Image (cartoon, rainbow, N blue to C red):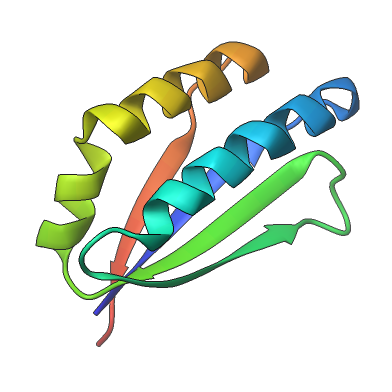
Length: 94
């Protein structure tokens, strides 16, 4: 099993638009093979920074989703809205 950390900086004026896109992405993610669960966290000490932690059964399942056209289309909109690329970190259980 792996965990993916997805990090974004969100200006307050773009939060509502981002939530709509994240909800679309989350709805699609839930139906993907290998997806286990996810949660969204907002930093208390640094407003505007968010972290999504997603659990996947394997890196292969994650890569299939990451490279999918559906995900890429929504992700392009997210990055355009925020004006910077979303950062991804992949962690494996030790």
